[in-house]
Length: 252
Image (tube, rainbow, N blue to C red; front, side, top):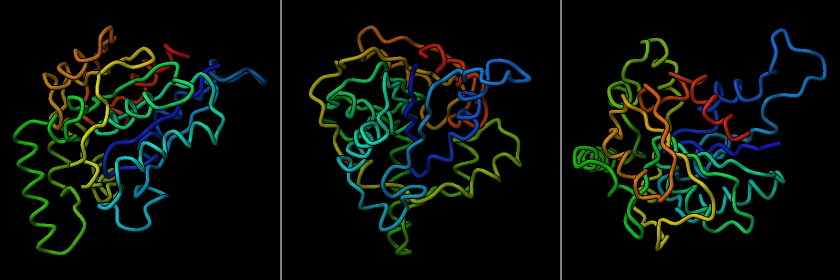
């Protein structure tokens, strides 16, 4: 059976996967038959350093290497087998780096609107000029106010949660924490886009944070990558959790 290691995007946490986790682990039959095995084996949503339950300290000072090591340690600590390693948004860079370093390669890497720069380039370089300019502006404002950088609610609503119901967005906004600015400015250490395992790219057609054309560019960089489209904003885990879970279960 397949294990899943789910890695959240910048400023979020393991909680962002809660609806997808429910679909991955639900019984195959409804009502469930006693002792009927679940569709997936184990599903482990990870809190990266400085995020979620591991949010103690200065999130802005977290290093890319710390995040990659956290992914590798989680797979070893939880003794995950035949791992499908899933990364959302900026975690795409982290999971491909981790996959390239893991002693036992994952069964598959799945990038969900994964933001991956060219090898040895800063993570933010993969984003549009508009996104980079916005990040720079918000960084200046947070520096002036001497506070950690967090996305303002209007930016979350417009660029990450476009198309979602108002109350759904209200519930999500409160779970966005500070951004790991040092990670976002770090360079990806990989010297090549080759991975020791197959890769699937989940392209979100309504994503305004990382538009479809940039997503397609990332997918094309990985030779032999499978591309799957979902009609969703960037927060597909909240807007289309069932569709995303069904894609992931193809590899169970």
